[in-house]
Image (cartoon, rainbow, N blue to C red; front, top):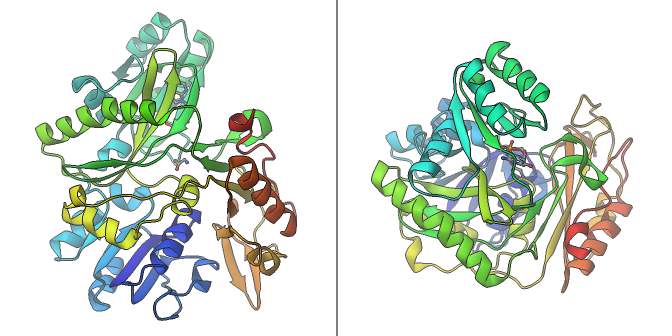
Length: 430
Ligand code: AMP
Ligand code: GLY
C-alpha cells in the first residue's frame, strides 16, 4: 500500500512511525513532514519515508501528487485542510483519503454547529447559547454570573476560547470577538457556555460513518507552565490512560456521547469518517462535552499510537471504506507519557534554528520514542523550527515508570532555551 500523510507536527510523526510498522505499507510520503519523519524507515522494505515539499493547505498540488504517485490512501493530520474540503476534493478525483469531509469537519470548524447539534441530539454538554448580537450575548453571560467560556464560532488557531470569571471579563471577551473582530470572520457568531468544573480528559473515537470505536482515555496539558499556569498552548504533554474513569465508566461515557452523536449524524446525513475527538469535562453530574475536534489530538496521538497494537493502516482503510464494525482495536496495557520540549518563548514568539543535541543518545533508550514536531535539517545538524519542537514519549508497565522514562529521555536532549513542563501525568500520580 502506498500512503501519503499530510502534516508536519508531532502527531504526524507518530502517524508516520506507526504506519511505517505496517507490513502492507510499501511507500510512505509525508507533506511537508519534518526532520524526524524524514529519518523513518518502513519495517517491510527498509525504504526511507520521503518528505514532500507541499504545504497542508496546498490542496490542488497535494491532489496532483497523490494521483501521480498512485497513493492508495492519503491520511490527513491537521484540521485546516479538512475544513478547506481536502477530502471532498480527493474523492471527486477518485482518490482514497482518510478524514471527515468538509460537512462532517464542521464538528470542529464551527462551534455553533457543534453546540446546536449536541443540544438537538441530547449529547451531554455545557448550558450554552449562540449569539451574533453583543447585547444579547451579554445578557446571557449575566445569567451565568459572568462565569462562562466565550468561543468564536470558527477556527482561530486554537486561540478562540476566552475563559471568564466575572461580568467585566465576559463583556471584554464579547467585545473582543463580536465587536472588535479579533478573530476576523471566525468570530462573526459566538457560543457562550457555562463554565464547567472538574477534571478535563480527552476521548477519541475512530469512526466510519456508522460505527464509532472508542479509544482509551488520555489527558493533555494545555497550559505552558507547571500547575496549569501560564498561557494556553497546543499541548505541552499527554499521557494515556487517564485513571479518572473506570473501564465501565468510560464505556458508559462513550455510550452517552457516541450513541446520540451517531444517531444525529444519520439523521442529518453526515458521513463522518475519521477521528471524533471530544474534549470532556468530568463534572459532578457526569462527563460533559466541551467541544468536538475532528482529527487526532496532538500530543495525544503520540501516547495513543505508542499503545496501539493493531495495524494502523488497516484501521484507517476500514474507517475510510465504512467497514470498521468488523475490526478490533487492540491496546497495550502499558501506559505511555509524552513530554513536549518547546522553544523558549512559546506560545509567544520564539527563535528558530537552535541545534538539538542528544537525539542519538535518546534513540538508544528502551521503550522510548522521540517524535519530532518543529524540527528541520540544517547541513548535518537537526535544528529547532517551531514552537513545539519534540514530543519525548516513553511507555512502561505502570504510569510512574513511563513518566520517569520520558523525563530520563528529556534529560539527554539539549537545545538553547528548551522549556518543558515537569508535571506531566502528575495529576494521575497524586
Ligand atoms: P478549546 O480551544 O475549545 O479546546 O478550549 C480551550 C480550553 O478552554 C479547553 O481545553 C478547556 O480547558 C477550556 N474550556 C472550554 N470550554 C469550557 C467550559 N465550558 N468550561 C470550562 N472550561 C472550558
Ligand atoms: N491536544 C489538543 C489538540 O490537539 O487540540
